[in-house]
Image (cartoon, rainbow, N blue to C red; front, side, top):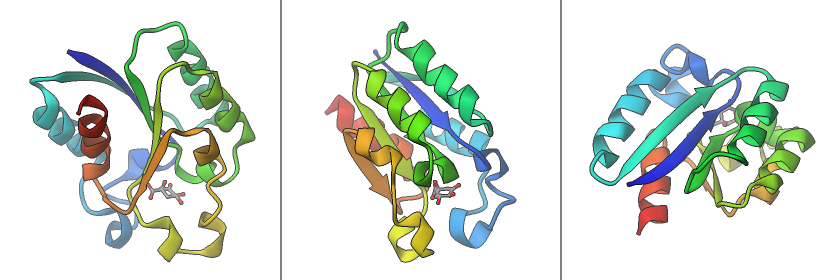
Length: 141
Ligand code: DQA
């Protein structure tokens, strides 16, 4: 069994209610249950969500002394601004995959800079709820 930490940043707790034409109608809990059902024979996951930058930094730091095979992170809006989350991601000794549910390059210009992605091993954008599953599957394979 492989073990993955999945961190979601600000406003991702509002999935389902938030801009459904962009992010779909499922909640983060729905996506978690869907992902876990798909991967249950080969992986386990720990999900964490916070709207607060420092809490996300703290959770990533904590992961440094925990045993995960990878971190999958959707930093939300912090992807475009957070040097602190970028720096925390660089501390980790295991792979980090950054995911975005929407295709950020088709959206506003300010979303085209993915600052945190510079500290990620791989990035994915535009694959919706599949992102977490595909990230886990690709790391396993
Ligand atoms: C997002 C894209 C970001 O630009 C936005 O601020 C989010 C969600 C995504 O999953 O597509 O909160 O990370």
